[in-house]
Length: 314
Length: 290
Image (cartoon, rainbow over all chains, first blue to last red; front, side, top):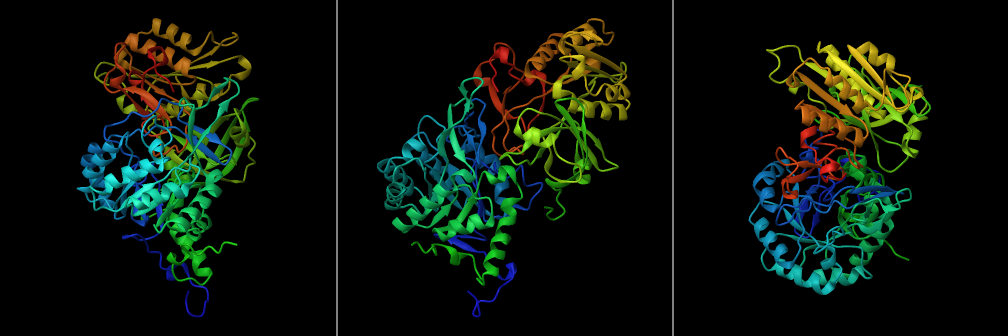
């Protein structure tokens, strides 16, 4: 807050935030799986305007992904069951990362494993690179083993995160699934295991049905629900994880405006990710930092970091 | 949103006209100069409606000098209904031009020395829209063209005048008769190719339409060794290549009936396509799904 609480312009508002020991130029990151590796949008946008880019989920071996259809529109959102199609961590390190490192923004490598050994091996490989941080994807709902089946069990979260912690000094972010009864239980497990930050939420398991064919729309039958439909759930989970752990939080789930992003920060997020909204409005993630600063400035605040955890619950 | 002299991806267009072509199809004319300037045949735009996801619509025609694009839209659901009902004068939120379009550069490869190359477009339904743009482009380059267009019935036979004005030769086919050819567009193509005087390598066939028709055309072309490009449709979310939602099964190499799954992969309809060489597609008869 500036001294006299008078309105400030967006340029007078400090946008820098920290997530643990990671410094970001602003709190807005592109979420995994909704921004590729940046190459498709780099011809049109200056990617250095982002707080960071979370890569498409990487696996130890290349993955062809699920058979189509992989996406379905829903009310206020969409379902996806892409199934982690990606070129594998080896190709990423050799052929993709060098270009990403030229973007002058934080690069967060999202890794998804079938097993603890997969995660540890990928963390080991990526720790030898110039990436900013690792995002352990313990939450993809669209694969038959690993990911969400690990992330839904606090004991397994503890084991996988601790094993990864043992082999890396890189900031270790853990992306959690909302498909649990208690987000606090898995959040505390990640904290106990030595995570540096929590990322939440990934998609909610859902389904769409085609009445004409009497089949699910998605070939995978089920998929992950994202978009504005899940924002209230995400806000509640960010709030609970912030209340019940001491870890910094990166919040996501249905963010489509500067107001949405600041609401997540109030609930406890130090930074936010924009995911599905980028599929509809590719400009949004680039506009958000200034739009958030404009709101903060109008309220007389001279920085965005002050919003984190300032919610006043009844 | 323009950044540092980079081209814009998102455009605010202005709807100048909305013409009803038939009971189920409309033609929108939109002023969007930067988009028009960058567009190529076979590319598409993503239009915002009140529905959650944008709607991908193939470019039907582009006037670079006037800064206009035209889009043909068929009523298939709430999103397309909304677009067909738009009133001229309103702003239209567009992302584009998107995707990899038709490649006239491959046209008549190796044929230049031996004779004139010839473009044959084959389409049905909304597939005719992107082909019209391709025909106009080919005409501008002085390439002789044949347009084969299939309709369910003469009452649905849209765009005939424009195709006649653009293509050197037109064959309109209808399942119910009453036009030049009775049968579907694939059968009309067969009859044309059976009496064709050019060698396969002198022809390029470009097709767009229902998946069954495209497979029929593609298999004919593979059999006759005629270069063929197809424009495909898939359930799409982003349209810009980042979500990997709209996968098309393709052969990693040249393919063939005996190819194992490990030699196939998925490519993005929105970014690697929507136009693909027909020989690369794992067609449904060979186990492909999309």
